[in-house]
Length: 481
Image (cartoon, rainbow, N blue to C red; front, side, top):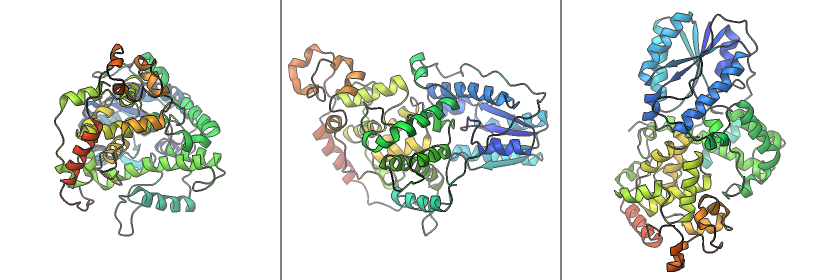
């Protein structure tokens, strides 16, 4: 008997470990609930709820193949080896199959499980699945991990030209086993249930993920490059939550994008090329997790930036978290996050730069807050984005590049449609006034909206001074430091 241990790969189609297990013989699937570990990783309640809803869909589709899905609990990943060994011995499992996960805790967990099983004669197989390229295979000429995205992308393109990652065939129906699927819990202790409104925005299951991918590549991808920066437009694929939970694979996304672009990924439709680039950014940040493990440990990618004199400003931090900064584009973006579990990517950069540069608050505060609210929360992408915005990361924005929230607002939400949607209290202002209501002075008193918590020009100078005082840039080694 074979066991597939599901993690962030909650799908039946194009699932490498599932296909490999089923090819070897009768297969059972298991998912471990790990609430303590999830709390330590700052996983959002809406994300945990999304996993459970996707597990329910997956259990039904695997059931049609006679593959039972079992639920076990390893409150903390330390308990995973014993819990899985017990299950393997009960079911007389010969081999366990997993799709690789990245990050320090994930790697340690898998190594511990493999060792425990091996000692009892059970083999442990792991497969490349959530990435197009295995970390450690896309390297510089000196065999180190890339630190600059454009160079990483160039090598990825060369590799894709030589061989395109193939889609994996879904397993067929197997003989019925004497093992029954477990019910999927509705909730997990320690995680609240999100609103029905939020759930409705993110229906679970592979069919929905595939529908979104098809709709995007059929109708929207041509406009992706020109519309993706405008938060009021439906310019993005809305697939990030499905990719993070593995309800759809990057291979499926790549194949769909290529199909819409006559097989081209460097030329042809600029929208398709731009979107494939975004898939490679996702790839890049996961490779960074493996090549530079310190970023998994709340450490800056650029060690010299650990010396930054961040402000301890709890009131400012709370105002940012609660969408009370007095800057409409920032507050509208934060409300979008709080109510939907998601934020438009352009705005993720704008609010991150505002927190780390204008408020000079440590990027780790923002990274943690995002993880606790994002339905698509992913350590690699979230950390990469925050470190890019705060100029502490790989390939990051130079410290003197500081987005001005007002000009970003005027440029990317010129009509104020996004702001008015999330800040209805500003709906009566005209499109010139609503980007910066503070300009209206006393005339604005009738509307219940706060004054800005910071002067943008002064705070910019404060950030520049803080960065100029840093020690010289050091070389980032590939070790754990």
